[in-house]
Amino acid sequence: MWVDRYRVLGWLGSGGMGEVLAGHDERLDRPVAIKRLRRDLVVTEERRRRLEMEAQLNAKLSHANVVQVYDFVSCGGLEHIVTEFIDGHALSELARSERLSIERGVELLAAVARGLDAAHRNGIIHRDLKLENVLVTRDGTAKIADFGIAALCSPALGGEGGLARLGTLATMSPEQRAGDVEDARSDLFAFGLMAYELFAGTSPAMLAVGGGHRPLMELLPSVPPDLSKLVDRLLETKRELRPATAEEVAMELDAVSGRRRRSVAAPRARAEVYQVATLFLRIVIPAEEIEQVAVRMADWQRSVREVAARYGAYPLAPAGLEALVCVGYPKVHENNCAAAARLLTDLVASSGPGARLAAGIDVGKVAIMNLSGGPIVSGAPVDGATAVGRSAHEGVTLVTVAAHPFIARSHRLTPAPGAVVDGQRAAVLYRLDGPVEGDTVDE
Image (cartoon, rainbow, N blue to C red):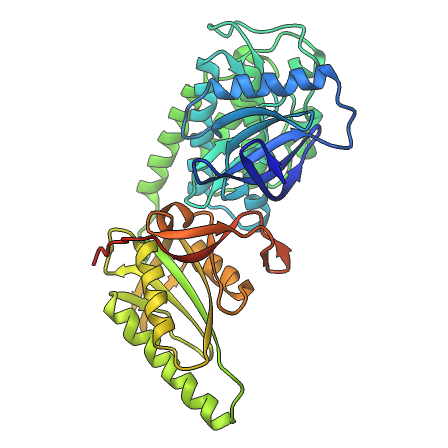
């Protein structure tokens, strides 16, 4: 399936009026997300206009903390917004799946505030700010998404009246609920609700006492008083009592973060963060006598250690028929992903007659702690390469969307829309087809 020059690879999700597809830009060779009106809705002129307005407003923004719009195309009688593909999760998912530290939560909120400030400086109010509409990339960057009901106000953001009362009722400011004039401070109320829910795990309305919410520091003694007071100001019913700008909020959060870092004692064991490529390997050995399989397995594990050593890479204790190698630690390559692909080629050549490899390659930041028994490595790329590699068929290497731009410089890659990872169809993966003619080695 195609949308203009964009190849559709899978389905990412849906919301109130739109659905989002995973795709690949064949001309620029990069992953994209494609938003269009839901197919189960009646496509009216008003909904078409609203989608086009979303694209126009979002396209005015070029900021690290806002999802970037690439294109707006019509195909098959429907309009489509093409944006950057975010390899990560919604902030709401992160809040549910892992206990975010105060420090990390403050950092993410400060980034969102900076993105919101960029929108406000361009005369745009978001009007639907919530945890679900903040995406966090694999490298930890927060990005504001879904400008579906955003509005354009005056450059001074004096306010906009007569706006349709759309959005999520639970995250609306009092003036938005009442249909009154909205301005930048309306978004800041929603930001306060989002911050409260991020730390408390529930909406302040669920913990209301006597018509007001319970302060965060009463619920969580670990929350700094300055942070709790900032959230209280953001949640003021009267907008004139809220902070004046998102920039002011970002600066206060940065100050909280700085004081917090200075007050936290250093841990006894220190982990260093490295940017590495992770290569997961699974060897399939022809059926033989059990003694022969054991010998082949031992030879395979020795080959992994020897080839990894030639690349200055760290193999995480090869076990059985599987292995995982960190390329970029301890030796850093000019292109760790390309080095991982070449390491894989060398391992295939040394795996013995009849053996076939299935592999997965990912990239990103890992935490490495050097202990007496050897380094301990953890991070999303370790899990990503493992999940992708275990799903690959014999003789196939799958590459994640994060690793794609690095490997594409030296190897041929083909979108693999049918790949299944952890029992679910993956949105975007690529199959490694071999080196590009004249590929150079950076060793």
